[in-house]
Amino acid sequence: MLKAEKLAGESGAKRIALDVERDNEIAIAVYKKLGYTIEREHEMELAGGERYGFYRMVKPLKGP
Image 1: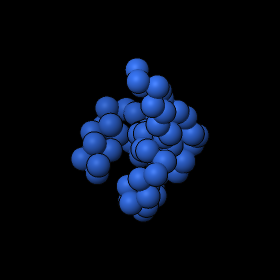
Image 2 (image 1 turned 60 degrees about the vertical axis):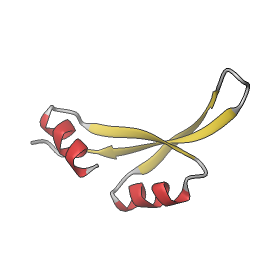
Image 3 (image 1 turned 90 degrees about the vertical axis):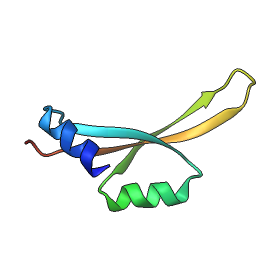
């Protein structure tokens, strides 16, 4: 993640975003420790009708 953040910042990105399943508590905790915050919730429905819930997590980036 740190490498992805570094590359994104070097390319001029102002922030980085990711989606994580709402029930993935371990990943959410890791992202929060890295400075990400939950921006919003959303769901996705697959062809079989199964629905999955996600959090969009974001982190502001520093310039190069």
